[in-house]
Length: 224
Image 1: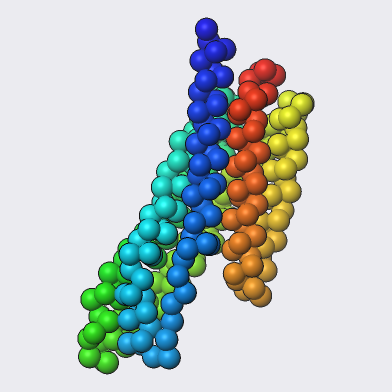
Image 2: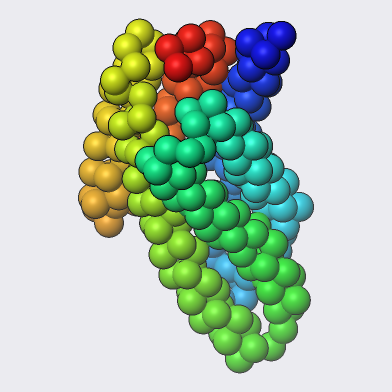
């Protein structure tokens, strides 16, 4: 009965991770383009799409929450008594919470500011626009930190899997490649930010799918 319970829980976690990956794609498909020649025009363009912004980044936040649930189940199956697992899970949680904060600022705080100041006098609009710049810097910094710690979390989990053999070793190797690509994209992000962001999100999705496949087949538990 215990093995049946483990299999059932691992498959639930597997499904959650796949759903999280699907939701994480939404910001790159539906996030509207905003901008304008001046502060007021920029704020108005942002305010005009406030509902879509809320939907896009709301979906991103939900994807992080679901990922947390899925990876907690994954960590439990790896063994929470193991230091590497504790380290990996802690970093993963920090990364997810950081990403949730960045998404909330981008999708809700910034939108609220644009809605309030879109029709304000030019001087107030300029002040709001300058605050937007500060928010953009903060969002970028938090996102970079999140991607870095999540890459380290992937490395820790991969080290736990590498010696188990079978599909566990395959997933570990995928994890090592994901870490390398993510760190390289993060390092070269300034050269092509959009490409780097898509690369990082893409390889994180590949890692989640690899873990989901492992959980679905319950391969790791068979070797514990």
